[in-house]
Length: 495
Image 1 (cartoon, rainbow, N blue to C red):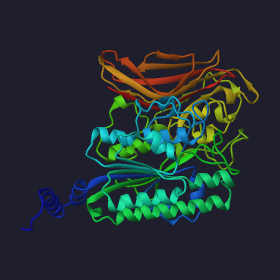
Image 2 (tube, rainbow, N blue to C red; image 1 turned 45 degrees about the horizontal axis):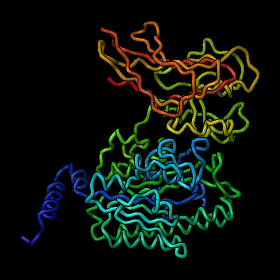
Image 3 (cartoon, one colour; image 1 turned 120 degrees about the horizontal axis):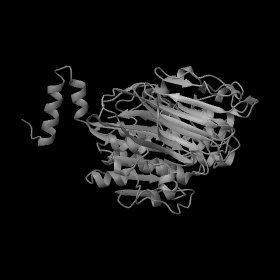
Image 4 (cartoon, rainbow, N blue to C red; image 1 turned 90 degrees about the vertical axis):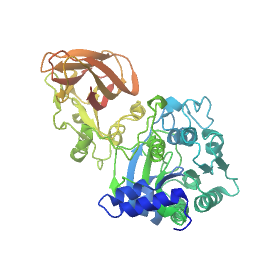
């Protein structure tokens, strides 16, 4: 037998043995070493990637997942690079990491560290590497625990950043790599997102992404490695140029990803900006501790809820003139098992928001900017909304009184159960939101009431299930008039 190391012999033997049976593919994947590459394209719009000459990014989209998404606006944080990169790198939204601008004043990175620092803490034997053209990323967001942090000299800019990343990927042995390229954002500021120069900058960044991917694939050990490659952006740009405001174009971001469990050519709408960090950690075999309080969830582990199934039923605007007619974004038809009780609902008003509606961020936030709808960051894909403010923008009678009713969930009597849901509630008296539960069809009982603002968050309510009960329904009742709104998403019962 050749003089093989014990590790090499064990891996080789496992591959040979696995290839003989139907579980060969899974067994071979289990022997490969997980590695992660994250590439950030500052200020890049997914829509303009599709317009540009970008064969390498196109190839990644063909080979894996494309997930458009949107971010926040003030008062949560402006659409600037500091909050954007901090959200991507820490896996939490600005209300946790507390970066509100590019000064990083008040940042809570000790409480919510970057994902490479979490890698070093959990698995210090792994090699971590970060390089950026915008120095605050590697000087401030990533901590000194990261094995290598490089802020590229301004004279070298993206050329130097890309060449350093390529060298590390090709010649080193990194386990987790983060790279930030800045020139697309520069072109957006100088010429605008509608310009040819912006498309040219995307073309240049695309070539550099291609060099990195080629460096990964040229590695002598590539066949024994399992790479998750993710490409993302911190914010978008307006057509004239610039960002920081609340337009949907400024709030745009995305994930392009290739790796295990990501179907070629797939598109998803449930992915959010903090998922980059969570996905990287999960791929490296690092369990996500609930105490970390992450907002991201691994893209490899989708968890769609009932409302997401409505995406194919969404309709175009009816009364809302500020929403582009091309956007399909609302329906009043609930998913299977759900219902909406509008028996006490007033008449008339804006069609889209008469009673509980099911909608998306892209549609709902364009009803009226800068009324905090942009801060509904923890709802994903399709969510339910009761919006008395928008409903009241057209002649109406009566008041807003609508109840969203869940399916009958199975429970075991005499035990506690947990009701969990994502919510976002903005209050103006006499508005009220009320959560009620009903066991086996009995009269509903109130378990939570909203009469004050509640930021976007996941709520949990402990339910005492009566002895002998076998089912529970949940009701979300919103009453009010020309007031504000209530968002509900991700409803689930566990026991």
